[in-house]
Structures are given as C-alpha cells and as structure tokens.
Length: 471
Image (cartoon, rainbow, N blue to C red):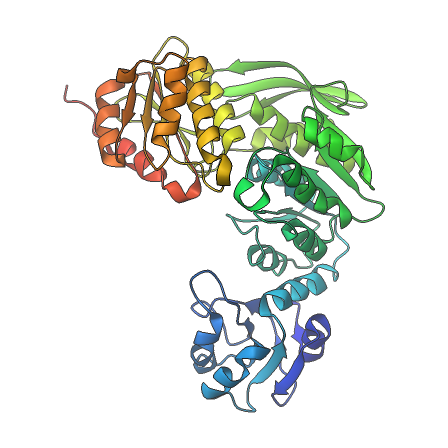
C-alpha cells in the first residue's frame, strides 16, 4: 500500500490558510485532532470541541515532535505564547473545524471509489453496518466506526481512506439545519441513503417537516450521475423523493418500492424474508429480530444492487451482519431471562419499533420495558413520552420500569390505555434492577432502551452481572 503524504502546499490549498511560520518542506502522513494520541509525522488541527479546546495542547504536541499545526486566527497570540518557533509549520485559518472538513474534502477527491452516505431518523448505524457488509463481499470497504458521524468524526473517517479501499460507507448524523449539507459536501457521495424521516432531534429542528428538509440536504451534494435511496413506506420520504434532483430508488413493502421484501417471518431470534430485486428473488435471513430490521436490510440491498452486486453477494452480506453492542443485541442473563440491549440511543420511532419486537419475541412469557429518557425532543418531549407509554400498554408489555425526567409522562400514557399502577415501576437504575430481578423468570424478556445521555447501558450491565439463584 502506497503511503499518502500531505504537503504544506496541499494543506494551504485545501484550507485557504496562511503559512505563519515554518521552514523546510515537511510532509505529513496523517491528520489528528487528539493531542494524546499523535505521532510526530501528524499534522495537528487545533479544534474546539464540547469539553476541550485543542489550542490548549499546542505546547504538548510540539514537545512530542509534531512539525505542523493548524490554528484559528483568533488564537494567534495565545499560540505564540506556547513557544511556536520557525521549526514548526504553523498555518492560520479562520475556523479550524471548517478547515478540518476542508482537508477531508480535499482527501476524498484524491479517490475515485464509490462513496455511500447514510442518514435517517432511525436505523442509520445498523444500515451502515449492513451496507458495509454487503459491499464488503465485492470491495475492500472503508466504513464509519463507532459514532464518528459528525463534523469531527466524518473527516477523521475520511482521513483513513487509502489506495487499498475500493468503496466507502459513511454515516452522517445531524441535530441542526445545515449539518447534513456540510457533511455531504465533504463526502461528495455517489449514493445517498435516508433510512426514514421521523420525530428525532426536534429540539434543534422544531418540526418533522424541518427534519425532512434537513435530511434532504444530502441530495444536494450527491454526484449528478449518482442517486438517492429512500424509504418507500415512509410518507415524508415519498414527499422528499417527489422533489429530488437526483435519480431516486425506493425500498420497502409498498407499491413504490423498487427493492422489496415479501413473506417476512420471525424464526427464533432471526428474521427471514424474500428479497425482490428488479430482476431476481432470493431468500434472506437477518441474524436479528424485528420487522424494522428488514427495512435496514432493504436499504443495504438497494446499495448493493445499484453498485453491481449479485443477489447472492447481497444475501451473503446481509446474513454476515451481526448486531452491534447496544443495538437490539440479545443476551441471556445468568438467571435465564433474555435481555434486549437497545440502550445505545432512542427516539419515538425506534422506541415503538423496539417495543413491538419485544412483544413478538416474548410470546406467552412476560415482557418488561425499561425506558429512560428520549432526548432532544424540545417542546414535544412530554407528548412524545406519553405516547410511548400508550404504545407499551397497547402492545401488551406486562410491566414498565421507568427512570429519568419524563417518567410521569410515560406513566400517564400507559395509565390512559389501562395499565394498572402496580405494573408501572419508577426508580433509579439500581432500584429498577432489583425490581426486575424479582419480576423476571427464566425465558422472560426485558427490553432496555433510552437516549445515549440516559446511560441505560448501566442497567444492562447490572442485569448481566446478577447471579443466578442458588440451586
């Protein structure tokens, strides 16, 4: 694999920056924003995050032998107080976060490989994983790792792109207007996927119509000969597709779908269906429960089909996929009950889908929902938490275990649908675990779900650590 270098001229060209100091012609092998894990051959971009400002660590990276830094023009005086000399190439820019994205944009354009960008209110990470698994059957595929899907994470992922890669699958997150536009501008995708459009990030966007517009920003930066893949079962996605300026392909079960699923069935902890491509049908098994998983698989299948994979390659890619930790990950406790760990994140759409999956899996056994707060819902928070209580009671969840700031709203919704007070337990995480252990018997099921900030994985860990009863 040929090593890719960055020259000072390339960095200035990409960022529009000004070389303030530096002598010689150093070349950099990578770009970093983390002063803790940086090599002397890296270029350090001093960005300001939520908790730390990289400008505070310039002296540290210089002591480690780093020969190039990019700093914000407004930090000029502060930076020089740390002792920058002419031995270090210092480039001034107006905005280091913008410069980070500009560098990633420059790097992405070094490669002619197909790039797929995935966003959506629900399922984007699972769809990203499935899509990478599908494309991986034919191409050496770069993919987003973890939650690196924002203005920092997307560039860092692109910087990993090298000459060995034949395709890339990038996840784009969003919580305010303009974010998808900027991220997709950086990525310059050949194909875009919007998994669905629902009530997520309403705090920053205000309404679902605004969510639709914000997700639709992805279309603006898809290559002219590229395409957008949309959910044909989703009303807002259909509306968006009707105005799209790129070729549109739909997935789903509706009459609008080009890539369809029929004969969907639950088989133990897996989901099976027949995948209908425009020219072929094939039976597929997903190693995860839940009908909503089929939509994720269809989106990945659409990407595979449009990039020239065979039905067999698509099938193998879907069947190779395994759920990530915290995303519909089924575990069996030492006490013999089953835990559905969906603790990584939550919004109204994903919460409802997970509840329906819990009910389908539990059968005649008991099913419990442990629900934490859904965040970033703004003025809609009370109403949407109440609706989750209604859904849980209507669906047949046997008992609710609630923690967080919106427990009374969830309780109100469940009571409205007739759930008895004694089946609605409120407490802190440790108290809920104690109550759960008393309630659940072998072969019963418990779903644990909440937004990232709710820390619901703590409950999963405590449940897993609970010893089996003495014989």
